[in-house]
Image 1 (cartoon, rainbow, N blue to C red):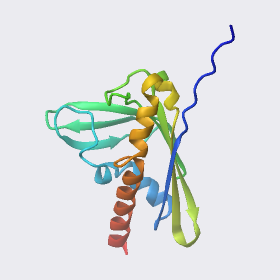
Image 2 (spheres, rainbow, N blue to C red; image 1 turned 90 degrees about the vertical axis):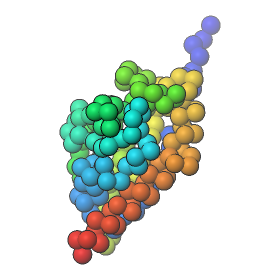
Image 3 (cartoon, one colour; image 1 turned 45 degrees about the vertical axis):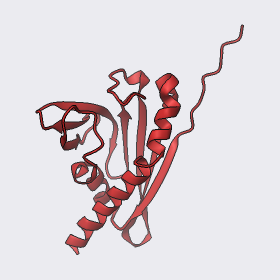
Amino acid sequence: MPAMAEQRIEAVRKFVTVNATPEVAFEIFTSDFDSWWPRSHHLGKTPMTRGILEGRQGGRCYTQHEDGSEVDWGTVLAWEPPRRLVFSWQIAADWKCESDLSKASEVEILFTPEPGGRTRVDLEHRHFDRMGVGGEAMRAGVNGEGGWGSLLKMFSHRVLTVTRKES
């Protein structure tokens, strides 16, 4: 009997163009992550107090909470400032932590210079097939309302706020 082909779930792709250089956009996306990531988007048992994306390959992506707990939700897989960032999305389809990297999807963000000092920020969330049965549901969740499209708008707004202050 032939082996069944592994089902491929299409990646989610979103982009935004911001009025900032790749260096500034990368810095805001990563080091300033806490300033634009919504407090509603976390896996902790108590309200989120801080979102952290550690700036190095192997760094943690996690949130801190009012009860003092820390909840890991990803690992930095590629750290290439100011052009590229890749992190695992260690969140299962039931919106609980997934510690097994082989079952995690991943997110890649590219920062490409555009004319006039602008930057195109491309985001690709892929490998939902690693999640098994819940992969389609996770894809729908991150592609829908409150997903990556709205998160990139929040990021874009933060870039605008920062760059206006610097002007």
